[in-house]
Amino acid sequence: MTSLDPPAPTPQHPPLLLRGWLFFLVAALAVLAGSAAHVVTRPVTWSAQAVIAFVPVGERPVSATSVTLMVPRYVAYAASPYVVRQAAATAGVPSTDLQNSLTVTMPATTANVAITVTAQAAATAAEAANRIAALVIERASADPVLGGRMLARATVPTSPAGPSEATLLGGAAVAAVVVGALAASGVRWYVRRRYGSAEAYVPVGPRPAPGSMPGTLLATAALPRPIPPEDTVEMDSLDDPFSDVDTVRFDPGAVITRSIAPSSR
Image (cartoon, rainbow, N blue to C red):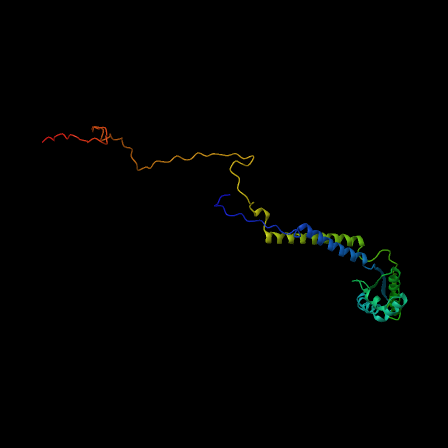
C-alpha cells in the first residue's frame, strides 16, 4: 500500500445474534410449538345429522313451488329456543351449548331439512339431533298441507368432526417453515442494509508486489520509441573554426605573446 492509496475501510461485522439461520429456528420453533399446543389441547367434537323430508298430504294437490315456500318455516321452528330447550333436557346438555352447536339448513331445490348437532360426545350429538327432528315431525303432523317424515336418522359418529390431528400438525409445520423463512429473509435484508456486503470490504494490509503471489507471472511490455519532431532538419557537422589557430602551451608564469601578421593593403 502506497501513501497515495486511500485508507481501506474497516469492516463491521454484524452481531452473532443477527444470523438468518438463528431467526429461522426461533420463528419456526415458536410457531410450531404454539400450533402443536393448540392442536393437542383443543377439544374433540363430534357431529351427527338427521334429515326430514316434507311431502304434501291431503286430497288437495300442492305444487312443488308451494312446498318449497312452506318448508322454511319448519327450519325456523327447529332452531327455535322452545325446541332447543326440550332437546337439551333430553340429551343432558346446557341449552345454550346446544343452541350454539345447532345448524338447521334446507338444501336448494329440495323439500328436506337437515338438522346437524355438534357436541363433545358422539352419543350426545346423535341423541340431540334425533330429538329435534322428532319434535319437528310432531309439529308437522298437525299441518293439513305438509307432512314430515324421518328420511335419515342421526347415527353415532365414528370419527371426530373437522380435520384430523395429523392434518393440523402438518399444516402447522408448513406454516412454521414459511414464517421462519420470512424472518430469516428480513434479518438478512437488515444486515445487508445496516452493515453492507462482506465482498465490498477491502482487506487491510500492504498490497502484494507484482509477481509475488504464487501462480502469477510478471509480464513486461516494450516502451514505444520516441518519434522525432517533423519540423527538424538534419545538418552536416561544421568544422572547428579554431582548428587553424596556433596554440601554445600555457604556462602561468610566462608572458603570452602573439605575432599579428600585417594586413595587406
